[in-house]
Image (cartoon, rainbow, N blue to C red; front, side):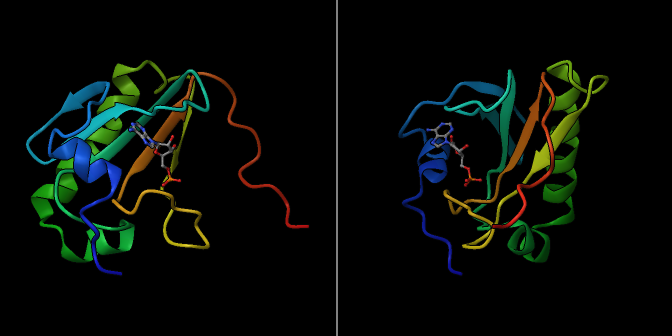
Length: 121
Ligand code: AMP
């Protein structure tokens, strides 16, 4: 899937729409989800143009990948959920129910996440 730079996270990265920033590093931005599912719900995104986890892991530099996952961990620690627990979710593509086609990791915590997935009907 080709990267479409009209997606909302690309607009956030270009400064065209605001975000509620949690932290920023050289290659990574973390900001609060606009519709939080739990008391802590942070989105971590690479600044580079990657569609999904598989795209990111295939094309990003080692520095970008290291920076991204260090930021995911730092967000969990800084938001106080590293001890109580949290869930990482990265939806990809149609079956993954990805709404925004710029790779992102949800960091969700502050209350029990519940079962991993609903059973299929
Ligand atoms: P996904 O379904 O994994 O692609 O998740 C996209 C997430 O982006 C959802 O949790 C939305 O609530 C969130 N979202 C959409 N627009 C914004 C925005 N402008 N700022 C912060 N979060 C957003």
